[in-house]
Every structure is written in structure tokens, then in C-alpha cells.
Image (tube, rainbow, N blue to C red):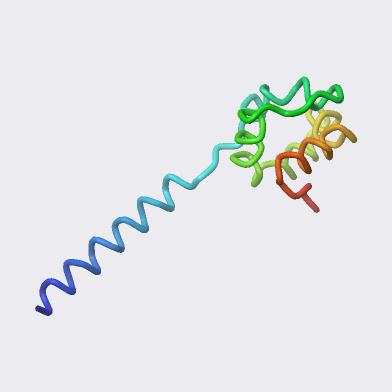
Length: 92
């Protein structure tokens, strides 16, 4: 019975390691391209936009610090998009 417990623990460790690898986010602002209309107008964000914002959430502070993207991510519309998508606006 001890052998089965060891095997079960080993499997759980491997599964948890795999889950952490798949949770890593590659910061790529082009992933937010489905949100451009919502960022630049009062249009409602699409489900894809919300999904991408949630995926890129760990990267938003990086985007805010980059002048190429800050004007989109720091706009009043972007705050509305974040609120609509249920993603807290980052506090960097």
C-alpha cells in the first residue's frame, strides 16, 4: 500500500508541475488586438477580448509602462473594458 501512495504522490507532483508550466503567460500585446475597438471607443468588449485581457493580466503593468501601449491600456475606455470583463484594473 505504501508503494501506491508514493506513486500517487509522484503523479500529483508531475501534474502540478505541468499545470504551472501551462499557466505561464507570454506577454504579447498583440494578444489584445481583439480589444482595440473597445479601447478606442465606447463599444462593448467581445468575449474574446475579455478572455485575452484575463490571459494577459500579469502583463498589464508592463504595457502601462510602455509608451507605445500605455495610451490604449490607460484610457478611460480601457478602464471600462476591464470593469466589463471583470478584470481589476492593475495598480502598478
